[in-house]
Image (cartoon, rainbow, N blue to C red; front, side):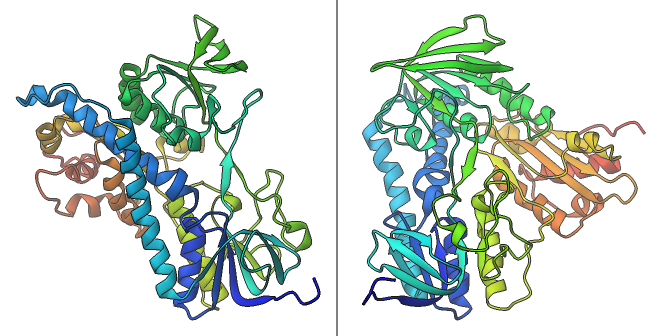
Length: 474
């Protein structure tokens, strides 16, 4: 400690102001605790708000609009060729982000949460040093680590400002619309951002080291998305890896290895989307009792408490699925545990959504997971070609499937592919959390015509009572 240095005290120090961090801070403040939240950004929101979820979904909605404009002529409406105003599009994205960020700033003020810009580094299990901040040192009773994650790179790739090899943050800047873009990785980020650039006019090539895109979801669902991307992208190569990358001033030379006819290719830009790694280094964990595992994730229990009893960790840095909604729930659990409440992160269902077109969403047990675990299940499907609402919208290419325990009839999982699948999956989350049976879904009256009817009819298909498809032979 420096002689004469002022040390501020707080009940809860939250390090990181992304969804997990601000959810923890706000809940702790609501429970009457004094809270200080520290982040390297100017405002709360973290990667999700400024460089991830929100800007990407803003752009993905634009891609849906462009797709709808392109097919409007089939419905008798001629809108002409869309013109892309890139500066205005960037400004629209900024307006969306700024509005939400302003809301978080106001919520901090209204709840009495002190927000400090700076970088926090632990000095012990009770003190943290703040670098480049108004306050240099904080003494805390409890701390919540919510430092998030960063994009993983590959050999030969370097992310730098103005470079032609980008991570998701660089891609979302929309510096330009490259004529040729290579997307490395066929997961959430690659599929979503590849779709954005392709819709804006880039010729996109995607390479995925695995056997197929979106390997976490069932193949009968991803098949719809793969067919769409095959038409939208210039090429999709699975079982293909990057052997080498060479960045020049105006292009990137790439050597591919795998299922590709032309191994040597050049691109205007390359997007690396091969996963994320935890931000657990450089924050002084060695000065505390906090343990990390072999992959760098902080070890936590069901209350999100680390191996140091005064310190908690939530979100990406604590491992598990790296999704903002999971981080927010973890943040609330951590705050409630700190306040002495009986709270635990014990969720039966964590939904996943890919915001491409068509959207892909699933929750709970997948059919392929059941097969790997030798679990007996009954799977029923409702094709959107039989959906009245899908027909009225001109989006009949989709499917809703329900995975059911054949003995108890309990719903174990749901998967949906099609327009608005991300909105529809919430009903399935509630069904799984409440232990609903297929009969509960089937007997819950859904409005007609809606896309949500497909969940009712998929459950009815299991019972053999679906109106719009023939019953399965038993």
